[in-house]
Length: 307
Image (tube, rainbow, N blue to C red; front, top):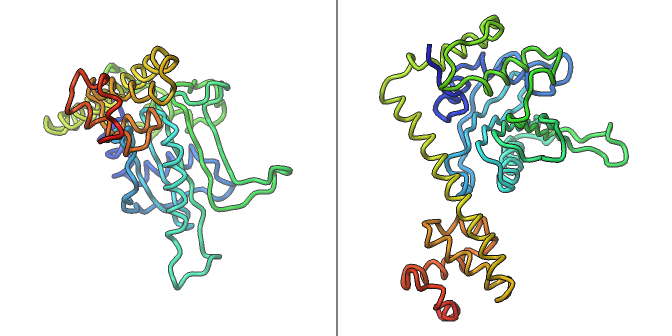
């Protein structure tokens, strides 16, 4: 039996965006909910229009829902970590919290918002911990906290089953996300022993999808790979140019030269602005320089201010 990778946008939403009982099991297993306050039922919320981060156009997958206590949950799968993603999580959770309030509702009626971010990347290299739980706490006494917003980040590449011990269902769901992919044909029996995981596995079988759906699946991975290539190439180009030319010509000019190199390699304005920290207006001017002069753009850098 062939399986598809559940981290893929199309598959993730198929499993967790169409089966509330599976999402409920997943959230109860992954979230640090207080004792006796488990999620009993869920309803899906429409996806909100939020500012798009250019370098993460294809790498973010999200599912939003609300439980029977009124708590909201934003579940995101991030294929590649960037600092911009952290700001996006903060923005989304804060917006979800604020949007509960209308003219007829008192502040006391606001319910907590939980942001669960599954990262298929390592962002904290200073610890082996893969599960990161953040709350708004008093610095002097961390037992005192302000209710309302909580954030959980899970670094999937760090996950090892032995790390969680007694949290069996959490282990099984994380194994589902980290072990199931196109190369797996025989699923371990302990995954099949869980009713919820077994059902999720049925939803990621290749045989459950049409040829057209499998093409959508492949196109998503192509987009993620392309995005990663552009980000990596632009970063390496910028780093090399900044070192080689920035010392001689000054940091600002070194960044301009790095941007020109990135544009010549096909990077977009938004990508260059994000990776090199240049104002969009400056990046646009440099892009115009490259479009006009092509490979000779570096020689015409003094003309930048005239554009």
